[in-house]
Image 1 (cartoon, rainbow, N blue to C red):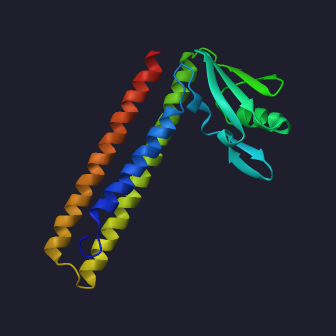
Image 2: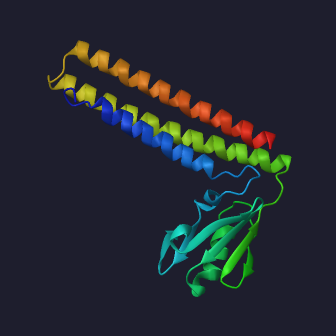
Length: 186
């Protein structure tokens, strides 16, 4: 920690934004079934909204099929509704206490809409990174103002914070380009 600015903390928070972005884009389906496609689904259960994985088990029995085993029989309709309302383009088929979710073929229009969603996730990650940068710069200015950090140190540290920000945004752009390529070539 250097006079009110912890570069390791700033790096950790920026890495957290990258990890959240990776998680978001992993949920975008690219034609192959993956259990984390349903990660963003929130179910109305027991008076509150909970993630799907807290009321059911998600499996991948076939390459183009997801299986959802719901633990509480009374939650089947709520899970079905939550999946349909999550705007993932999925239509579950009820099978007792289980749901089968066939993954439709990705057409060109659907691929383009997935790319748009990926761009939205990237922008959200960049905004989070810029907020971390702003917080770091604000604490540098505060440290310089109250005399706990010299002007030269402040300038040097602000250059380091800006470099970390730029590098992290380049990482987001690289991950986005990889995901876009993956979506469009399936």
